[in-house]
Amino acid sequence: MVDQAKVAETNGGADSPPRAAARNFVELLHDILVLTELQGQLLLVETRQELGKAIAPMVIIACGIVLALSCFPVAILCIALVLTETTSLSPAQSLGLALISTAVIAMTMIGGSIWYLRSSIHLLRRSRTEWELNLRWIRNVLLRLGSRTNPPRQTWR
Image (cartoon, rainbow, N blue to C red; front, side, top):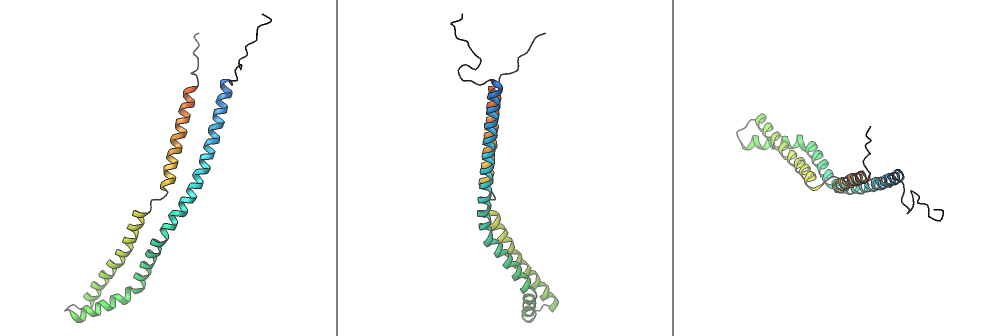
């Protein structure tokens, strides 16, 4: 028996189950940190791109608001004077009609720009997709790690 080789538990290079589990957990944490960093970088890039797309519609909205506010009194009076002179409407009726038509034009400009913003800009679409893929990957890795561990042995008393 002296000339026989001793068989150790770690013979063959395999780690003990607790050490392998700890190594797998540390590797998982490292991968999660790398994914978090990449997700943050993607969020920054995508936010810059989306803001770049939003500048022109925001300027149009601001111009529409300024135009509506600055021209509102003058436009109402001009339209009301034309209506009073060309129809049988009283000055008060002409002013009311001019007010309504000017408000409709301003709301159409603002509403059109808002519609354009909603339809053309998909906020953070790539970041959301990457986030979902990362979470799915983490869940799959955790499920695989959980299936590798042996269930606890039951001891009969």
